Image (cartoon, rainbow, N blue to C red; front, side, top):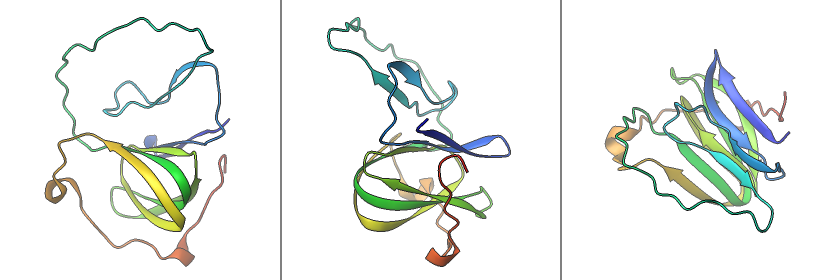
Length: 147
């Protein structure tokens, strides 16, 4: 299908959208309660989307969620629990997108990579991140979509 959720005990850690995913229409891939919404939209030529504005709505954001767009290259994402315990890994390639929704994550660049990252702001690194020691390359358990 081209869309995969990484979840542990019912908590969504990440949503991966593979570069080959395609489906006509509007598809929001995140639950409504997520502070970062990820949607996929495909319309044919000539489709009209009614002009609109977004009204100011006060929102409380408790955790940073980020979206990475892999423009080129290859990267391994290692997923960790909130207790900094390694769970599993996935490989992302050019065209893939991942929403990192919760818990921990780390990366190893496998081929020179170019990414776009989108997350909520304002960003204050000293208050926003807890860094910890992760796994080594030979400890990675890389799962394929659907494993």
